Length: 542
Ligand SMILES: Nc1ncnc2c1ncn2[C@@H]1O[C@H](COP(=O)(O)OP(=O)(O)O)[C@@H](O)[C@H]1O
Ligand SMILES: [Ca+2]
Image (cartoon, rainbow, N blue to C red; front, top):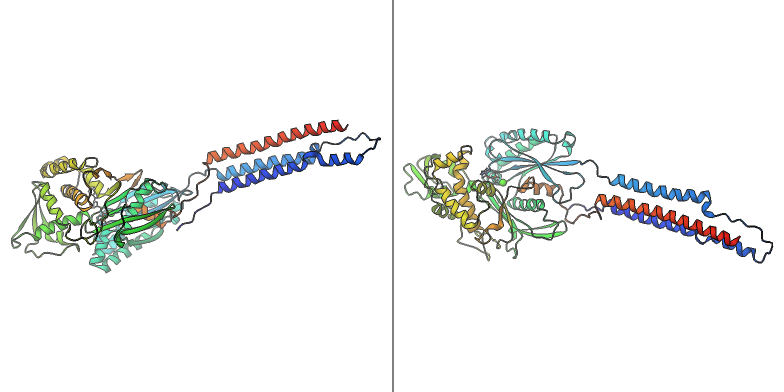
């Protein structure tokens, strides 16, 4: 883990204190006029005492020069320390992370002040670019296309980052559930896609650091680090924010639980800024919203009694009046479920817009029949009881924001969803002419899935529903795993709390100036005092 640094201002302050001590010491050696008293005792009872004129030692040029030197020395020292600690014109460093998701790839450019990389909240998102087309896992049949697809956004990154910083700017690509599924389905194809994106990223003047598939735990943990870093929770003793991420192919839940974590796979330990955290995290592969839609449609197709004739799939999660011919292949082209043999290659997807039935059908994708722990979410996965506030981002936010459900009570959310799902498709299209019809048609399903996942899956209740904050950004930065991933790989989150300067720069400079002025004044006062006392001594002698 990264080093901690001792702060320079502290060291300089120490030197100054010592310099002060030396100055008073040298003053002491001139005090009391010892040579003078010795000369007097030597003269004893000599009655023919000559008219001794003792010279004031402070008037000796050497002493005056010495005092002047001390004063100049102190002033020089303070000036150097001021210049040394003057905030330089802000220099930024940069980092690039590519989020290769199942549905699409986004390029994130981060920047941070070069001298403050170990402080929380210092790294900010400078720019994002959405790669045109689908996610890299969709290029399994044409792997070279995956690398080429990144070019436009990477060219943009070259423009956004100053050229003299290019060579030191790290670039990381992290792929999530789409690539996890492709790896399961066709390992060589997933390797080819990774090689293709690697080759493409290496053609840029940045410092290429690797392209890999993140594990579900990493995706959850880095999302948690991102939201807590951005909220500046990590250096405070206050509580942390749980993280809920919903993608197209997987979903993650990560938080600090109150109870013991009963399964090893769900536990991650961190030491950040001197605090220990034990996180609970779980990633449900195949439970992203696009895969669950396939699971739920596949289930409906499977349970159709007559598979020999053209199937009209009546779907309560789609709006009344929605009617579209789809291929069977488009539902079963996933390793998340087994294919069903059907006579026809297509079916008609017909919406009926019934929220209660929609939720019933979604519940079927959660297996709650077994739980080897004291409590489970679904599919036999351990889940401690959810505790504290949660940030829900990615598709959790996109869907709930579209449905205008980011600030409602649980009951109101349910009620509004019911009304929305039963709204005729024609009206929905009329109301949202600019939104892609594929997205638009799926919001009823996606909203219902989110509610069901949070309530039935994660056991949120109407009472703690509002502990979930649907968020897109914190400050200027998107909530998501990418920032946490980069902070970790660049060692920007130290295990121990970095030393902070004793006082802010302005205060430090003022303190140093006042302190050295005080020393000069004291020296002058001492000079005046001893001049006077040596004069009166001379008078006594004379
Ligand atoms: N504006 C939007 N409205 C609804 N859904 C969106 C919007 N933008 C992105 N999404 C969805 O968010 C999800 C993002 O998932 P993604 O990160 O690609 O996958 P994963 O994290 O599972 O690898 C996808 O389901 C995508 O369709
Ligand atoms: Ca994602």
